[in-house]
Length: 354
Image 1 (spheres, helix red, strand yellow):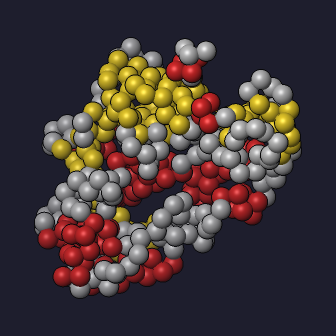
Image 2 (image 1 turned 135 degrees about the vertical axis):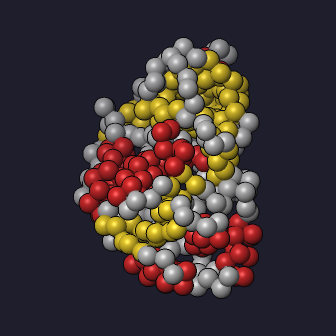
């Protein structure tokens, strides 16, 4: 019998994934990561729910203490990104470092051949597996998986990829799972409320600086760049004949650069720390669609792979409020290709019209 570790968050998705794996004949071991004292994912209640599920299914269960690793590898980089003027998405890094890489190491020590999760993505092919978007477009989570190691793909299983959320809940109810009606967590699991309050709780003190327009004229002052992100209007102050928005955050000079709405549109960007799930060499050019945020629609673009770690994207149509620190994730049709972290922006669409 094939042995697999199933990652359990205490929610309905991973619970149904476990049921489907068991129905398919896998010898399962359930594991949950303990991550953060006050979290909306894998907290103490979630651990209790996962333990109850495993007891119901008759499978062994372990709780893995990843609190120290979560702090150093996820929370600390999250804080550092805001201090550097970027707006991070810690969920992509958590999936890369903990939910897949670290859990696969645990799975191997438990003698497992596979690691299964409740992500809404599809795996296509056996010899050289590809990750495709989940059938349920509303729940598709492929964006968060762009950074996982390509070498892991043959060892990963995603039982929910062909299902819609309502089908998953129906299975949970039919099988009498204790968490069938449990609500799912949203947003960043370790931030309860506004991220600025979280940063202050962690001892991050913003340095005051200037608010300037795109010509460098000082319009006012601010109490810390951590309080601003690209596209923001609140907190800039008045006195302008047109609404002003944050166009850029300059951490080196502690400046917030602001401008009218049209200056938020960009059509060129550089991405760093890239990870590709396909065999691409430097110099490769491809037409792709790219998501610039998890909740954003994918837009057409030309991707140029510069090195394994760096690439550029030229968007067919300029997009509003592209934000350094977020992930730019590329697809062709339904296939996840990979992506990277937005590092620098260009604005050829605007400059061409000046």
